[in-house]
Image 1: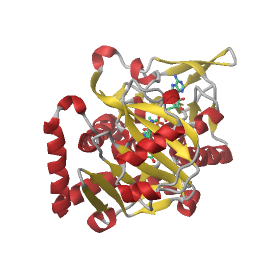
Image 2 (image 1 turned 180 degrees about the vertical axis):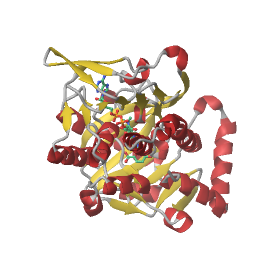
Image 3 (image 1 turned 30 degrees about the horizontal axis):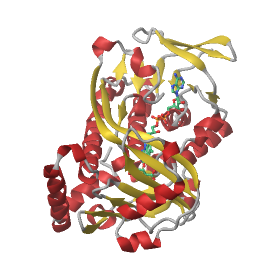
Amino acid sequence: MRHQVCIIGGGPSGLLLALLLHRAGVDAVVLERRSRDYVLSRIRAGVLEQGLCDILRKAGVGARLDAEGFVHDGTLLVAHGRRLRVDFQETTGKTVTIYGQTEVTRDLYAELDRIGAKVIHEAEEVAIQDADTEAPYVLFTLNGEEKRVDCDYVAGCDGFHGVSRRTIPERLRQQFEHVYPFGWLGILSRTRPLQDELVYAGHERGFALCSMRNARLSRHYLQVPLTDTVEEWTDEAFWAELRRRLPPDLAEVLEIGPSIEKSIAPLRSFISEPMSWGRLFLAGDASHIVPPTGAKGLNLAASDVWYLSQALIARYAGEESLLRDYSAKALARVWKASRFSWAMTRLLHSFPAEGPFLARMQAAELEHLADSHAAQTSLAENYVGLPY
Ligand code: RFL
Ligand code: PHB
């Protein structure tokens, strides 16, 4: 088969790119390794920047987001005996929206189905060939049968463990990585969110986050050692530990209930440069990972996809310079969001191996944040998303 663009990976990056291209009359196919049910069972991001919401609306998939998403004007930070509400609306004039990545993905699938775009699931052994030539192609197997897609361009949207990044020869790739000595244990429960906004809690026993998906669905996280397993964490142990890490008045009103999902994710910062090679272009987690503390992963995937979609659309209108500049342009925003995610992680987690110096630095930084409108504005500006 032949398509103008072959997109590897049907997560949010790949699906959004496919939709933006189809809207502009560029023909794209998506090859996804998993089943649709599997993709829709992954519980991930929940905080959408205004930039991502605007893209979803432009792509024609904003209706449910606008009807069901929760607009948040600020967030609460509690740590080192301080309680600080950062007001996004007042400091930046912007907000974020709580709407699960699963729902974004569901909306994208529904619209791609409606317009008849091709998303091939359970595509195995995907291999990108001749990406550094004028005629790239992609091989894969489907139900044991070998298939081939000939295309003009390949978009690598297949996440951290995908094949796209590794298709770029190692000698041409520079990788930057920082692994944190802990993970996040997350649970989803049919309980009332702790309060109307997210609560980021720093505690000497470790970080905790109280988030949500809707008025009856909570998403909470605990910092845990990398050696912990999900099986070791009963629901009772999770709730007891979360309560310990919250200020008493919040712990008291925390509604608890059985978990309906529980998982542990390691935290890392990772960036691979460049984000393109010949006619292969990477977007989203395929090229970079941020720790979830700043809620930036999905949002960065969206800014990559926006730049890439505009570059490919321009290319089919006869203008090639945007594609040439794609990697540099995307990386500039990636590094800034990675810096923010790293700084939020350093500020709020416990790093016992680093001794008391870091803990005092965290306390000083929170004190500065509490005293300085400029510092709050800077945090808010990054949290709601840098412009693109
Ligand atoms: P994905 O979502 O990993 O999708 C990649 C897709 O590619 C498929 N694939 C392949 N397909 C074909 N052939 C292959 N060889 C393939 N290999 C893989 C996979 O099956 C998959 O469907 O990457 P994408 O699209 O770039 O999207 C990135 C986001 O998913 C990710 O950045 C966010 O979820 C990160 N993240 C958060 N981001 C935010 O912006 N805000 C948040 O609040 C937030 N919270 C989170 C998060 C990630 C978390 N985890 C579990 C990593 C919270 C958590 C706990
Ligand atoms: C989430 O709701 O899953 C979530 C929210 C904020 C974060 C990370 C994850 O910083």
